[in-house]
Amino acid sequence: MKTSDFYKRVMNSSYVFDKAKWSKLSERKQRKKWNKDIEVSVQYGAGLLTVRAYSESKKDASDLAAAVGQTVAGEGW
Image 1 (tube, helix red, strand yellow):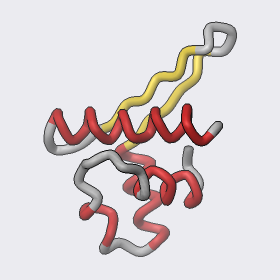
Image 2 (cartoon, rainbow, N blue to C red; image 1 turned 60 degrees about the vertical axis):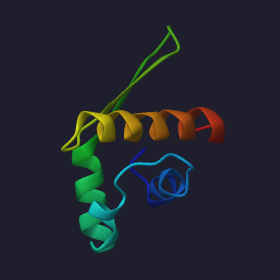
Image 3 (cartoon, rainbow, N blue to C red; image 1 turned 180 degrees about the horizontal axis):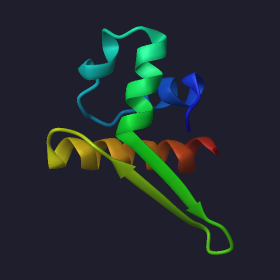
Image 4 (cartoon, rainbow, N blue to C red; image 1 turned 90 degrees about the horizontal axis):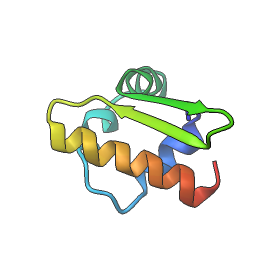
């Protein structure tokens, strides 16, 4: 979930969330911010994926988490 390819897939998703906070950053700073804003864990044996997203608004964090989760499920990550 920390790769540039995964980041680009989430950014190109149809989900609406604040993408501007990453757009003006260098690739290195984008990754650093992305890693602070997204936390993903897997519970092995249970098939449970937990996505935590942090943002300034609850709705934006929820939409971002949904975009990450859908990208994982839909893109086969």
